[in-house]
Length: 154
Image (cartoon, rainbow, N blue to C red; front, side, top):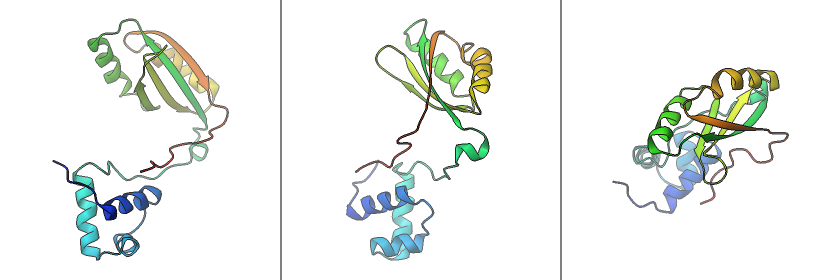
């Protein structure tokens, strides 16, 4: 069971969302509570699922993953079983950053990071079209990332 968030919890979430490297002491000072209170509140935010994880955002170009590709996927059947089978298989692919079930012309949209177009072509031909139930894919190469992983506005 989760508890209600007060203004201090919300401020802590906003601050941590913008800078996950804040120390407990820094965060406590910014929200005007003691370090012990801040630590308890932060632990509760983790335990209740308000904070899923903390991780570094790596620059894709620096690790040779400069090409961003969006792939629309259409499955051959729209059943809970075919969706489940597809989702289990796609979750195992380490090059897929996001997989979202969508309404409209596609069943899923995948966000994929690769080295370049040749790298994507290899992955597409050997792994993407081999996913269970895939009838059709449509590929969109991102030319410019305008907004990426913006903080939530709350």
